[in-house]
Image (cartoon, rainbow, N blue to C red; front, side, top):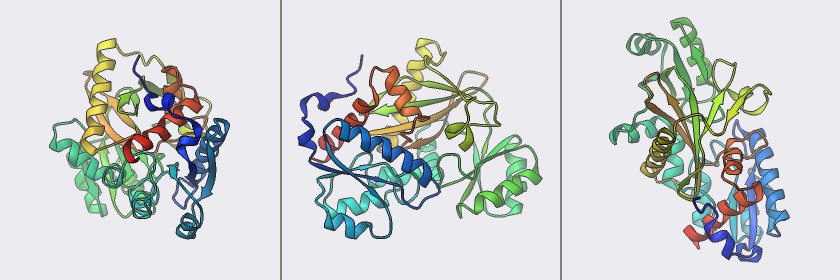
Length: 317
């Protein structure tokens, strides 16, 4: 089995110093972040780490300057926490932090730039178009065909997303997505099973197959529904799962991802995999996928959290 914990076994709780868990924030994913942050904080304190929580608000800079902080555990989802801006602030203050750096965070948060990087390296990602008008919707429908999936370019947790089967529905979905983001993408829908692969300290965790009676794996299916299906083992043949893990690692390496992440993938009727996006600060709630994959690899939640935190020691001292 891969060594997912690595440095953790050689560190004492006191080696982490005083850890600030950054959660909440002002993005559309605030509610999820509050839940994730509370569970991460409890796990760290339960392990004996000197950790405290900061619900990120407008006074964050003053709080960071006032408190003695040796490192930060970022559990902010979405803009303001997962897009490189928080990472830049912490870099300026000289505070080590968990997860990816400024550039990788910014790239992964931008679905369009992510796809462009992957395309430049020959990594398969669904065909897409950028929507800025109703006329763009008509052009995209003619070029890509239906069904299509509409996405705000800089949101997570499936916020503002919609699956559409007509031009009228596409225009309506674009208008809705535009209320969340000035840049909206529409993607070719890939018919087939959906998988997600978590990366922990440069090692893929077991893949999870996702199933939902919803039109797609939306916000409700992710965080609220009781009928979402998760399969580990994922049902792929061993060689297919190995190929999927390698593809997801390559996709993360292309963006410069560090520490931990989660990659979302579709498989078409021919068995080919299509990369959708990367989350650089995935959810850590009781419905979340990274803790689920970690359990399948033999790591409990506390071990997972400590492993993520330990990666910040290895990466940033």
